[in-house]
Amino acid sequence: MTLINLAIFGVAVIMFCICYFVSDSIFQMSYSEVSQKSFWSNGKSMPTPREEISGTLLNGKIYIVGGSADANEITDNVGIL
Image (cartoon, rainbow, N blue to C red; front, side, top):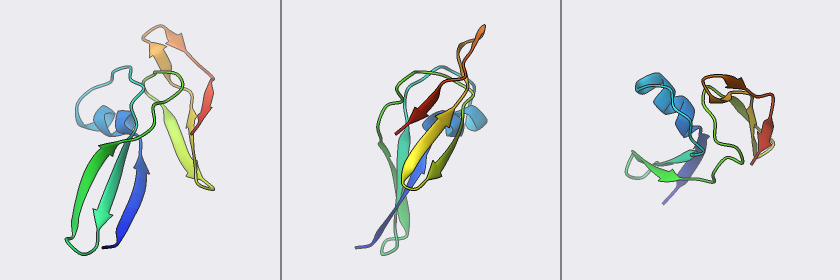
């Protein structure tokens, strides 16, 4: 069974689908080429819970940039997972 793992920021996905909220959750989506189905599982937690983040995957590491811990606090913190 071949699985393709994609790192997905759970906050970003929920941000576009439902609403903004502060969270430290990151979710991982796996796709099976055999069954042609995908499923979600919990990944690592972000070092600092926040909302409205930007991020990218580079050389196997997830870089999480900016965001805010609440409505009045913007951060320039960078998290690397």
